[in-house]
Image: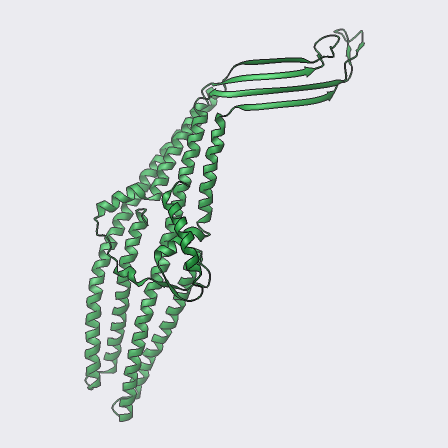
Length: 439
């Protein structure tokens, strides 16, 4: 494998996977880079692509064998029956004794000198297919990495949502305790307590659902990354505090043009089609090769009577062959190959356009995520202020229970949206990395 990124990943994974696996069922903080490294070493989904790279590299050696000489050797033994002689009208039958033991041996060597580019283009084709297999492996790896990123960030998001819900449950229980105390004093209604108990019950149900989602996401992440089944992943909280690059869209477009595996695959497809076209053209050219042979046969049957001796001879020379049927067969194959090349070129243009549009869309979403974060931070500030104000007024019998419920729900919703907004910045950043081939 010639790709340094894949090789480096495998080496890092070899060092890290043991540490990650050793954590067992105890929850532990695992960084996203460690997840990537473990997946590169252990992912069952990635393994076939890496094996395909090895297979394609072996095909190069097979294609290079076309430059080596062809050597054929033969050895035979036979029993020869007696013959007979007749006139042309099959009269005058006469038996012709022949030595019964026959033997033969020979060696033939043929070295291609000129094949019309067939051998050279076959080697080039194998090399291009090897490169394409490597790009396909990169593309598969990037897809797995982005999928893992989604699982990882979702675990982080739902973990934070769990914290938000737990805090709201704690606050709701405090309010409920205050309500019970006021009910004992005759200053609160039982209906108010029931409605707030319903709020707590809904929050507890939401907490159960969040825990189930986290378990499912953890299972998906662990299996996809090839980690031990009992691994419990705790996302690295520092991922939100990292300084993310602020390069403009033009920089991302340039990176995508150079690094996107989908674009590399499309370019390889165009090159492979061009070489396939050259291979078809090679059929219309003569083949030239050096030949050498030695043979020994006995008895000598071309004489009458046969001579019970061995005849040996050798020769060297130049062989020229030309497939005359290619004059009327190759034109149709060549026309088909030209159409395939044009199609590959059109697919390259379409892929380039799709990536350009994807980068532009992801970049806009990336910038929008920052604006959304600012808005949600302000929303949380206002929701908390409203909650505290309403709580104070409710304690002073200046607000209804419906006001408290609305304030609590607004605060919960704002806090949840803030968690989502923070995660979205990281998500769209990694989406840009994925689209541009830099994940």
